[in-house]
Length: 224
Image (cartoon, rainbow, N blue to C red; front, side):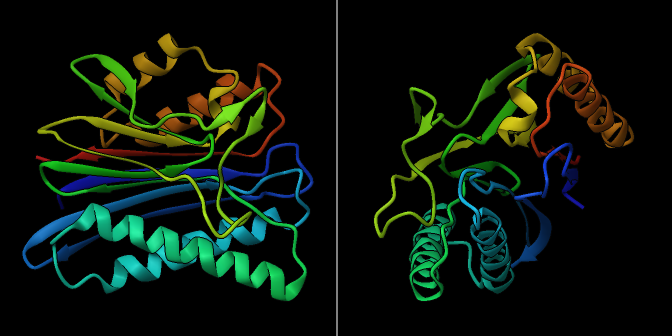
């Protein structure tokens, strides 16, 4: 196993959970590859959960069907564009009001690839420093991009190399009431054996500070 991962998605104090989460690893032509995805259905849209769950289901299908390692990150970006078109068409055909954020991370043993839209986040913690790998697409408290609201969507793409690091994906239900220093300290010390407890502490930290929103987060560590 090249990666260790754990995650959770909770309803918290909302009427329903519009978040969706994907964590999976497989070997492709001798290389271990891991995918982690957090989607947050837009709460102001009554069918937000449809876009969120559909995006995760279709990305899971795409990941399971990868046959080669070429252009992995761009393959994922193209898949997300196809997913957006599918959600838009289904929404039109079924009369749905739906949309979702998406933050997707693809890892090989030495490279990461990010495809993102909305205001969920992906972080990397290296050498004791926590930094975001995504940019919030939000202006004056409103999303400027998401999946499912138009045939064209603004996707943020990022890729890079890494030899070691800890990754965190989360919906805004986690980070809105989370201090950067607390998050950095937790990620700096997390290990495969402590991932579950770390996740529990992070959720408890924000719920004790009054967070009511759905909360989703995933932690991914590279094995040795």
